[in-house]
Length: 262
Image (tube, rainbow, N blue to C red; front, top):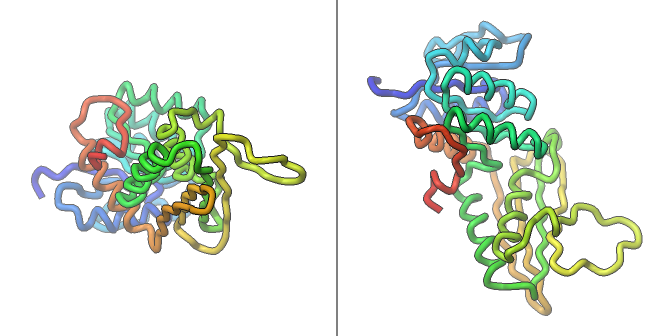
């Protein structure tokens, strides 16, 4: 279709890559034009929908594309984002598990091309983040904050990027810094709960796409905010929506909240 923006899907044969490709098929303004996998992938050369061939060369995949969508691992995302910056291609990534230095590199590369880096592209999850911030602001210090997240057994990073973003939302609502309040481990004689702590506990097992529960625990009452994912489709559709929004924007590091007007 005339006027369609051309999309490169990074990790095109992965679980999220397949979901993104399916979401693109239902999007009139975007079209799959390149599919990228890791160097040496055994399926390189495979023909995908629309006659697109799977490749393992980022420069070749990005040539002629307007935007890339990437759910992979930090090392691969950074390498491909560098290539996208060289090619002038906008970049949407939901990869998590970056170090502070790696996040700083993403911000630096976003000075050259438009980038959206978000831990979660679900509209409902981002509404949950907004609700969490407001609940922390309204409930105040009398309610202890604890987050529990559950993901599939193959997930590599913990806590999840979404759980950390929820922790940041709590800290923002309280006027705090998450790094100063974050509590990830409890074992042995730990003493009383530190005032203002923001606890995150991670569970792993099965094939669960993701569950996040935010608990605000007061005396004699508790507020619980929950999101449970049943599939990866909403993550993919959110990333495609972000890609549509991002194309044509000037260079910069954009937030998913801007896409969703939150």
